Length: 414
Image 1 (tube, rainbow, N blue to C red):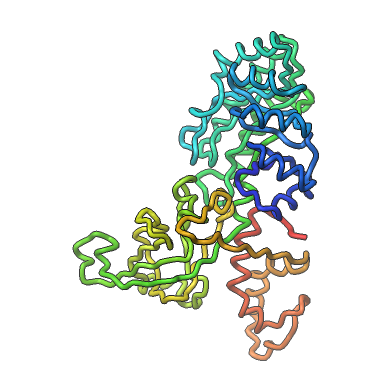
Image 2 (cartoon, rainbow, N blue to C red; image 1 turned 45 degrees about the horizontal axis):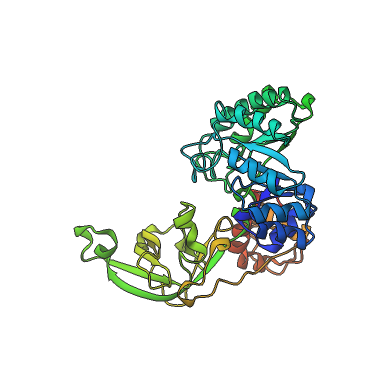
């Protein structure tokens, strides 16, 4: 994998991915510098995957030894020719899932049937080396059949490239992989179609290097956001629902110490709707829908557009209460600003041992066994992790949240 740095450029995340052998998809000079200057990897493990680059950025990539880069037009081809001494070019084609969370085909990529063959031939005439083909079905893919169409088109262009004398040895299948397990389409469904397509068009015997550019797949569920209520206003439920029958019912408006100009910019830019829940909630309240009231959740800025959740339902909240949002790692803090003078939230990192991971992962099984035993005198008995059963009950909610966050990736933190 070549992780899409644009998704979340947190230094700790990048270091972890680098230590696990990941390459990096960079879209600018700044992203390239962040990877190189911090010694995360060498230039060979970077792909400059932006088909529209400035001359100075191309020159800078050349200076640092970054050779792999994408293009999708004759103009970009000429620009690279004039500003890079030895580029290894990857032709980006336009095949996308129109239902994707963020479609990209209109902005980037050449037509694979008409423009693709012309650009391959033109590169030969300019004495430029094309090493492969790339595509991106769109961020947050919802129709995995787009991968099959794209891989088929890439095979045809590979054959044309070989006839033109290019050493075609790389296929970049881009991103689009979901970052959480409640999406319309699962990661495993996408992978099944990709694997079948690769077996048909690019079998292992061809010795083609196949890379991908996952972003949200790695970043999304690794981050959770805790927000504090700075203000609570009691209102008529009608103000929330706009239904006459709710005129005399109770509603509320909650104001968070975050905003769509901060981590919640994903609502505007990434078409993602986060759903919060109280961070501290009694067990008996979790499934009690009768005490939920119509709620609007606002951000902290003075902009009327700064709305986090509209016409949702929450228990009655008070100033100082906390809301918890999971799956907040992709395209959130990376695009945050300090609009209205508000700071970007600080980050806390949790690192734990293999033993504690096992404790969290198996917590539900252990908890069920304890309930079955129902021994009133076992509160002080220690389990093999050094936690007594009383403590187990106290941290039950925390463990369940960690399990949701961590199990999807099967990632073990060192």
